[in-house]
Length: 226
Image 1 (tube, helix red, strand yellow):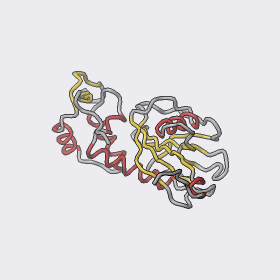
Image 2: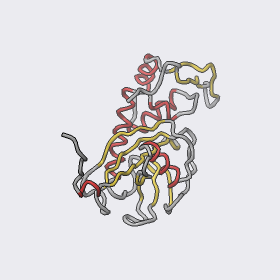
Image 3: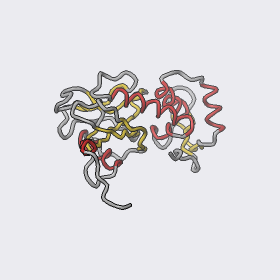
Image 4: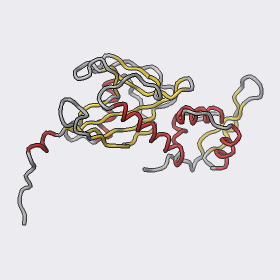
C-alpha cells in the first residue's frame, strides 16, 4: 500500500541543534572553549558553542559555523567528530530540542579567543574543572572528555594536540592532561616507542641539560577512523 506518510503534530515540534566541545592544550592543561550566552534562556551563563541546524546544512557544517560565529576561532579543527546525541525531553526549556554533540581538537597554539555573534564572552577554561554550565552542557562535556580519553587508547588523537615536532615529555603531558593523572615515565616511553606511531625528526631541542630528541608522527600513523 502506498501513500503520503503523515507525521503526528508533535513530531514537527522537535528542533535539531549541534553543540561543540572544542579542546586544546594551554600551559600543560586541557582546556575547553566556552562562550557566555547573551540571550535567554541561561543568559550570561557559560556554555559550549552551539545552535540550531539550518535547512540544507550538514551537521559538521553546522558545528563549524557555530564554532566560528560564536567565537573568533577561524582555524580548521585538526579533528572533528560526532560523538553522541542528547535528546532528553526536558533538556531545553524552549521545547523538545535534540542536540548532536561534536568533539573538536584545535591546532596547537590556539590561545586568543573573543566573543562573536550574540555571545557576551568566550574563553579557554579548565576542561576538568569548568564553571557551572547552561542546559545539560556539563553532561555533554563530561561525555566528551570520556570520549577523548577512550580515543587515546585506540587512536593517536593525542598527536593532534601537538606541533609537527615534539618531545616525549610533551606528548606524555598531553596524555596526563587528558587523563587527569600522572603516568610512569619509563612505561609510557616504552609503550609509545614500540607502537610505531612515532619517528625521530633528526633534531633536538636545546634547554637545561641534555638537548631533548624531537619526534614527529610516523607516516603510517593516522587517527583511527570511527
